[in-house]
Structures are given as C-alpha cells and as structure tokens.
Amino acid sequence: MTEGDDAAAVDASDEGNPVFDRDGNEIGIVEAVDEDGTLYVDPDPGVLDEVKAELGWGSEDADNYVISPDQVASREGHQIVVRGA
Image 1 (cartoon, rainbow, N blue to C red):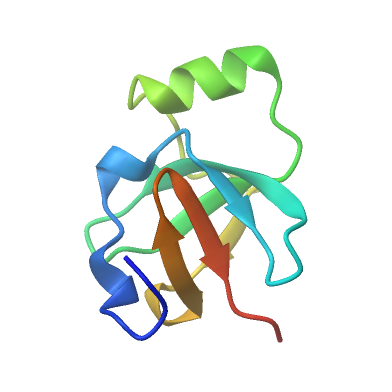
Image 2 (tube, rainbow, N blue to C red; image 1 turned 180 degrees about the vertical axis):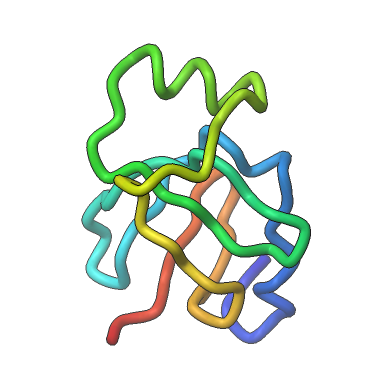
C-alpha cells in the first residue's frame, strides 16, 4: 500500500510488524489491532513481545501507543509508517 491509498486497511495480519515515523525511525511493533483498525504499538518490545505479537497473542495494554487508522500514512511490505503530529 502506498501513501494516498486506504491506509485504514491495517488488520490483525499486521501484528508483529514494525512501525516507523515519517523520518524512518522505528517507534515500536504492532502488538494488537482491533476490529476498527486501531493499532496498539509497543514502543519497547522484547523478544517475547515480538513473538507473541507475530502469533496474534498481543494485547491492548496501558504501555502501548494507540494509533488510529487515520494516522497510518502507508503500509510498505511489512512496515507501517505513521503520519507526524
């Protein structure tokens, strides 16, 4: 998916994928995605967190960043890029 496409098409298959800001800095991994396409991003994942997310065992906990579908700028392969503030 490129910028300008329907960026809200993020789904559970994106769990475990890295999330980057517009400058290319990794800001975490997708821990979970709810049915509305809201991302829950773990800013400091450990190896266990990454494996759990890839297996779909992630959770929406208080330490995660919440990123709404309209904040997703693009999906490029397995990488998600979010818009700046």
